[in-house]
Length: 223
Image 1 (cartoon, rainbow, N blue to C red):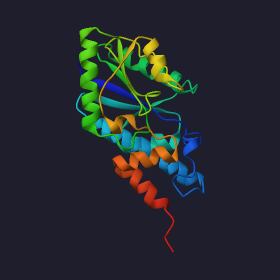
Image 2 (cartoon, rainbow, N blue to C red):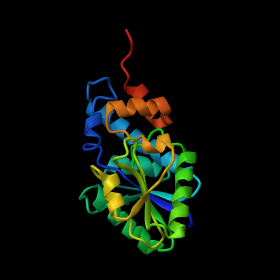
Image 3 (cartoon, rainbow, N blue to C red):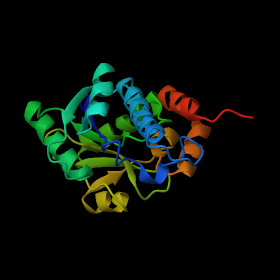
Image 4 (spheres, rainbow, N blue to C red):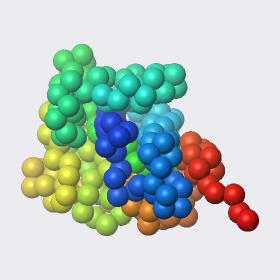
């Protein structure tokens, strides 16, 4: 299997990570601080993915102009979310565009809230997926989140539609659709961040620099 093109979908910052609101500023919930943290999660995720072996390119898909501007400055290719109809619609749109561009390259979807992701973890997970897809064992493979219920990574074989089923219970939904669950530790790949408790667990693993900077910027001074 050749290197994977990864799509990272990112919601509008005004609507992103509602259960995480207040985590950036000790419960205050300032929208600027919240947006800064949400964007930082995505930047750290993408930076780790771009450094991983087995990744050809990382493409962000978003309709948010601030996200587009910041990621473009980071050197990330950004695809406009033209459907603006939710996560799975954005991923289908992005995967169809990439399949049309290069049908011989496998495609993956990576969640944008993995601030503790390490490049070697992602590389190892993709290597496991490669064995499955090249053997024809399944058309797709996925990595479940730390609870085993959600999905943080979905990879399809070259020429195979991504068929994303992200959302509540997505791990089971992807299995029912024929995707094979990847087995491996990969704590940073599995630790997505939806709540303050998730952020605490990710911090125990080691947050990326953008997330650390966002939290330092909004931290209240001690008296």
